[in-house]
Structures are given as C-alpha cells and as structure tokens.
Image (cartoon, rainbow, N blue to C red; front, side, top):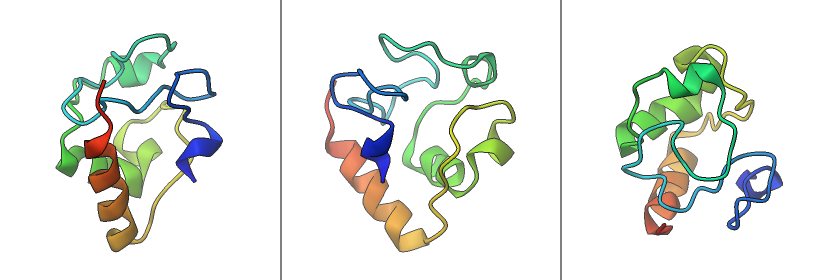
Length: 87
C-alpha cells in the first residue's frame, strides 16, 4: 500500500520513509514537502503517525498524502514496520 508512492531510495511520488519515526515532519531529504506539512510542527512519533494515518488531511489540512489506514491493527503494523526503517 505504501510503496505505491513511497520508495526506499526517495525516488517516488512521496518521500522516502527511511528514518521517518522520530523525524520532524516535512524535513526528510530529497522531497518537496507541502507548506502545510513543513509548517505542521509535528514530529513523527508513533502516536502522531497513528493519528496521521487515520486521516492525513484532517490532521494536516493541505498535505498531499491521500491514503488513510482506517484499521487500528493495520496502522500499528505499519508503524512498527516504519520504526525498523533506518535513515
């Protein structure tokens, strides 16, 4: 689901998710983030990612992230996987 837009090498429609857990939103390398995400003042903690994945556009109006993950167990799995991706 995520790899449709996010590539490990940063060569996707979305930014690389390597090192995303703990990173300040809108600051990853080699990607033109929306002004909304850059100004969000979020840090991608597991709790912030959980809320964002439930409704990205509700949490950060103006983000380009369209995909939601409505199932709580699936979100937990995604976040656990993201935590394994090192920068």
